Amino acid sequence: MSLTSKHLLGMQNAPVEDINLILDTARTFREVLERPVKKVPTLQGITICNLFYENSTRTRLSFELAEKRLSADTINFSKAGSSAAKGESFKDTVRNIEAMKVDMIVVRHESAGVPLFLTKVTSAKVINAGDGIHEHPTQALLDLYSIREKKGKFEGLKVCIVGDIAHSRVALSNIFALKTLGAEVSVCGPLSMMPRHIEKLGVKVLHRIDEAIAENDVINVLRIQLEREAGSSIPSVREYHNYFGVTAERIENNNPDILILHPGPINRGVEISSEVADGPYQIILDQVTNGVAVRMAVLYLLGGK
Ligand code: CP
Image 1 (cartoon, rainbow, N blue to C red):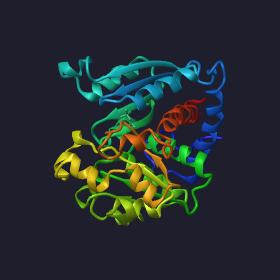
Image 2 (cartoon, protein in one colour):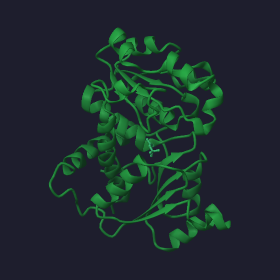
Image 3 (cartoon, rainbow, N blue to C red):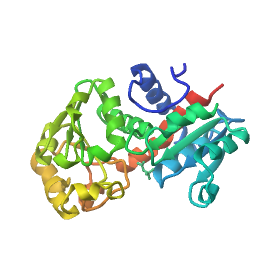
């Protein structure tokens, strides 16, 4: 079994068979992660570079751990401390890394389209670990895995993505993948954080958080990305919390059966209260654990001989 594509650039147009193959393969690796020895020889001899031009905790560590669990050789590049500061271009940096005989590149970059560009300038297999406000496919896949584990199906499942939709690569990848699997997807947030014509993606637009909680089975709460000009879209984070914050009171009043996801990092007291972030409705740290298995699956399916 293999994926239809050599690279993982996004969830847009990803075939349902590919998504299901990744999720099913991840389930096998999830079991490996419960063993005393959490390592398999699957990618022995494969060299992977984690090329991170933007900050990351979960995605970078999760990929690195997934690679180690599969016995790949890994090298890590961070923009800070690299020769990018001396003026070396992105393309030259990548070609130098490729000259070290790297088979796969996992890339995070602040600019949308960089993973696609990489496929044109290297022969390595490329995995998008988040490109600007475009896509974050492995985050969507681990969200799907975590939802499937709790809800068992996607067909007819009502999922709402809440927050700064306009600046969110997580939102876009989730919308594409959830729609492909048959979920009913909605988005909720202030008008100023809603991309124009978002409904053309086949999603319902909600403007009240109480309605979003009441109407849905799952809510994926996005971080307010102050580093991406989201701050200018809202009067203040306090006001955002008052109108759109996911709080225990709102959940108890509207839908105590709701399942809450958050991709992290969390802004406690802004998009989600601490009570909810640490409470019984959420599966935030399960998402992180599942992320290692999902990334193992992607690396295995793309990197295997
Ligand atoms: N969810 C996510 O992408 O987190 P990081 O930015 O820490 O990788």
